[in-house]
Length: 170
Image (cartoon, rainbow, N blue to C red):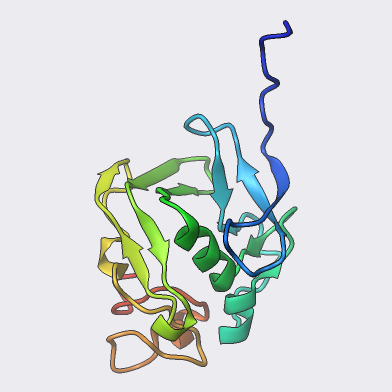
């Protein structure tokens, strides 16, 4: 490495503090190898070791560990996305190693008083298509806080939290 070359960042756990935010610095997993890196990982699931059947408070505050499976937390996601312009990359990999992606040019999550409403900009591309569009402008739902448009609770049915609109379209 010459004096002019900067070391490459590695995918790892980093401590961040969103600008102009009153929350204390917190740890996130940053993906640095996919599409030139710089991706804050909001949710990681790969082996089922963490139970995602949780209530509103757990989804608000976050759970799991950033070194393993985790949900970062709606309040932290809100603080990050309120501080600047962010894109959203959905990166899914199945047990056979098949990867599906969807990229959106804008991503923001509102505050708790809005129900952590999801805002997506335009779909840029990917082989997962615009599958998240149905959730745009939806409030977050958990088994104990039903904010979807379905007569029953999609979050209770699926035993997890998400920006559900209708149970089969999430």
